[in-house]
Image 1 (cartoon, one colour):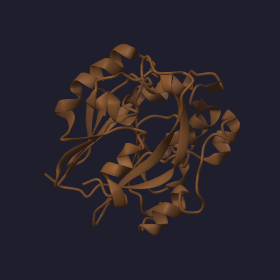
Image 2 (cartoon, one colour):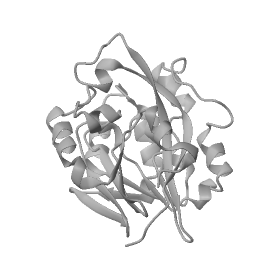
Image 3 (tube, rainbow, N blue to C red):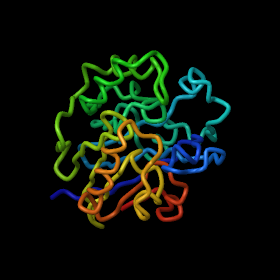
Length: 247
């Protein structure tokens, strides 16, 4: 099976209350969660997982004073350029879900095949113009890449040999995890059903979930999904995987 080198860029932080990060968490505690974008390159493909947030979208949601981004280094397009990736180079773009901190630059990659789950697309189409983590911009950006879109149905799908998506649900109606085969084993990018390592290692479920049953069921699957499990927004990630390399 193909082995990939999985890397990431830093693109800023978003705040989250303790009770949203973990069931039973302290609502008065606010943590700054890093937003990282994963990518892998081969001779023929560049695969991107999520696209971070756009400051214009943060303003629409009224959180522009809460998110942080060090410019220019953490601007997603600038950061990708520094590692040799131009927007037109991206061939495959996997959207784990359509919250604002994942969909921000979705429409910047005109040559990419875009992958999203049918349940996520159906869910956001029926939401009001503003909902937690979503805005009308989520639907608008997805419509702009509709011609590039491959819709994922069911529980699992292969994107490329050695890269697959796994339906998780839970956090959002169509959340997906991404499993990448590397020289160090299978890396599972858990997405936002695991904001923190506490969910992975201490089995503490997230608070911000659309379906708690699905979030719990996904937690049970984790040991079988990967040798290395990566949470969605944990500052400890940088301590464990410095220098932009996961595996």
